[in-house]
Image (cartoon, rainbow, N blue to C red; front, side, top):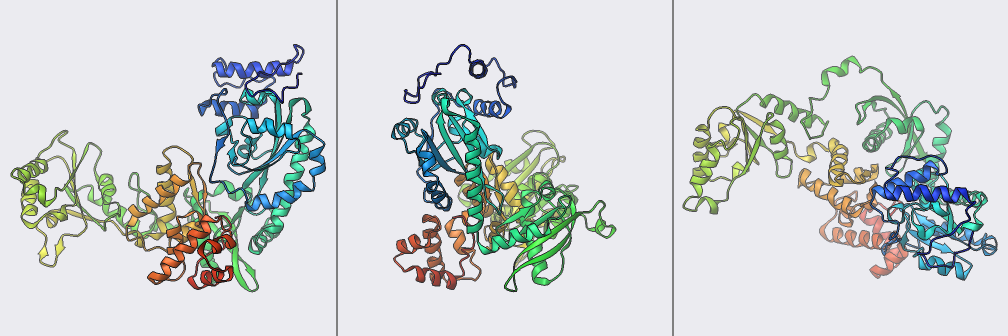
Length: 611
């Protein structure tokens, strides 16, 4: 095989006619790009892990002739992971200097944090390919490389023609994921790149050993609470058949049985129950998970110096619901809406009962989702939504006539449901005329109106609002905080629009539960869209990932206006500094000791690891 490491990126690697493996892999790859493979696994010389990555790359629309690492200017190169890995690599500098190779460290999204390349010629080759820090070598940018270890969670060696792009066919790369020893999540990867002619299975073993050493150092540098949680998990995980969870407000450790049982929303639910059990000294008993499974929980606190810092939860699935629970089963859900709190069950009962009426009034505070409830109440068939015009529109010469015609007419199917939004904004004369127009509507369809106020006012019964047969009241978000985990999951899935979905960690859910939410569900939806837009690749959302203004507002005590501004400035500086207290204090123009004092005085929670 010719040595073409120093050749231009576009040059095609050459091989001898006797090299059957190279020829077979190259042929399968060319057939896939030409469409002949039809994305079906061809078997033979192509390994499944490689072909699966080829297939994903094709489905993502990557052109093998134009793919290139993506520039990521916001990546934090001097991360905690970088500081842990660097001294370990420097101890192995002699081994790297004896070979023409490169060792790279990436974060969990495939962004290059640091690169060690003793040979200047080889470094120049990688520079030409943009395999340098602050660039992403993730599969979504370059296709198949050893970075696919971040997706599979297993070490992998990708050789020559197994790469998706021909620009890398003269290279081989071995990658091993790095797992956080407590959370078990992938935090990055180590990737060794060398010439195809120098590749050997030994390089993968070497990288795997280094990754294991990194994980050992990560455990040593973990916080005391994290180590206590891990020790508690190891002490109680005697039987892998029974679900076991160890958690605090920002960390969760599960065994395989629990991981199969729990969904993303359940993490926040379990922490809420566990924290109550630890503080009130009683077990929460039976808990219903997001998928409807009912489990009995036994809670053991994890303590540090006599103070509870977390909990061990032993779960046992209930095969049959307890007879006493049958009478309080949640009301049937409204289509497209989620909730399980008592306030939400009351709404569901009202809404289902109201479906038999000809006219329904849906009341509630702005942002509670009155329109969504109105649509859910409407029977099967067409739904027409009309916005109440403002006083200026009604004051026009034909404004009132046009509005009344809209109200009393059936535009399409005679069984259509007419939804009138914000009818409480009508002035008394217009409200009375609207009531009379609704009385002239032909029978058949339902009328549903939304309002911020009910049928009674200070002057007695409202002429229009009092004419509706049924009234359904939508609860404010503050009255159904138990539903926040379900709402977060549903809103995140909707905001992702089929793309990667974010997962809300318990500390984030608990922080959001401390807000007053004057804007109700609409404000929560705006927050979710804001967070999803900042995390296009999905993944877990911790309290530290929330916008800085919210982090300041979720401090544990209610702050005065000046204190709120100070807390906002501190949390924003910490996020800009990636959690580095020294840099944050420097940007604020204060000493680091002053920063710590202000954080304690303002009640800002800095216990989360990731900023």
